[in-house]
Length: 166
Image 1 (spheres, rainbow, N blue to C red):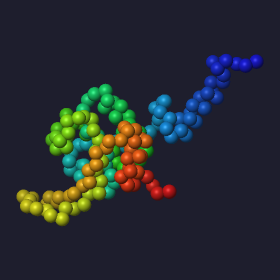
Image 2 (image 1 turned 180 degrees about the vertical axis):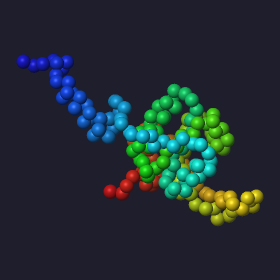
Image 3 (image 1 turned 90 degrees about the vertical axis):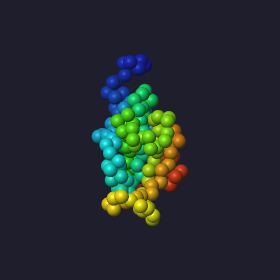
Image 4 (image 1 turned 180 degrees about the horizontal axis):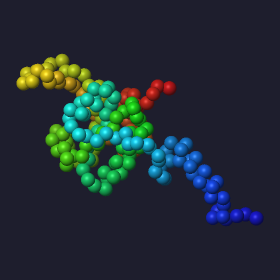
């Protein structure tokens, strides 16, 4: 006698789904257990500079409230968990920090930029405060698919070390 699917052993089904969730790299049907959030929330430019000095690339999402931002938050959480600690992910809420966002001179929100390779500027120029040091930082716009796969391909294309060497 063949049993209908509804009468199948639920523990087998639960074990199968659990195995699928933990082993399938691209499974997105259910929330993944990502652990504690690895997305850093922007608090100040000083904190941002400190983060750059750690030497890792920083993917910065400039956001405003909206439905698309909810999707972006989920992608950022998943990507931050995937690439931690080799790439840092930061979210800037532009209504809270308009000065930092306006300097990017973009009007289409949300958008993502990747910052990496901070190098002390050769020409420090005239400065009012001798304690201020100028740096040159490579800034690349993120224009790939908004997914973990998109980030992986972007990092590969731009030669950014996003994971441990195998």
